[in-house]
Image (cartoon, rainbow, N blue to C red; front, side, top):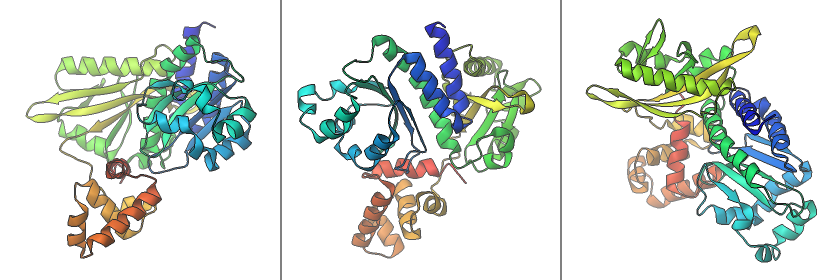
Length: 373
């Protein structure tokens, strides 16, 4: 099998995983074989969950994986230093972060890396959740370093892993098999449309139905989804077809963002991502998920929802919602009839429970969960 065919097979598997998380171990095993690495680790984390939703690995003793999560993650100086310049989508050779001589002086090297003979690796950052990362990490046993060919393959896959993770985050806590998820999709505050490769609608939630009925930018015709004037429709259909071809193994397009311009209104922003949709007994067929951001329908923090999702007290959730809506600690204290010191104490408790340490990260976290009704 050629390297290009191997990449296409792996990409197709990645987007099948976005619809069925049980497929991730199969992807990791296939990727490990295709790249000829001794070990691979992948962790996907939803915002606000210090523990990963998906952790799958190959070539590592589960004992060491558990010890890392429980203890050695705090001693991983390479990971801590990388945070200052590592951006989602970047690839990073771990040995470039800290030199061999300095690394050999650390407890992390002597008690964790050396017993496993895991010295050199490359990691791809999928997402930065503030206090936790989603990433894929791979390497060889002993002193062998990751080759440029292996690095190139990982670079090809990372945009698709990011795309699949975005679907995972938006669907977290919902039924992921779309043929059984019609009711669950209505829990999403943002409009969601799932189409086949030709733009014909397979599923949509109530928010999307209302948007299409209003005929402000998007509409549904006998031939599928339409976007205003015909040139925009043609661009949208082409984008959908290229994105869906990835699931079919005929391309490497990871999806992305497209704007739909409207007369007298701000444009709609469409996040289009490959998705393997169930089609009953025939199995899966190529499709795409389209998440639609409407400027006139901003996401509003819901204290009750934030409390349930982040396991906060009612007071902590109200404070979190207030900050996410642009308020200050002092404003919250005045409106709630409590002292500023009490409000600050609440904020410290929120930071402790959510694993974030900055208000900016807390805002991002609250708005992420506020996309659910």
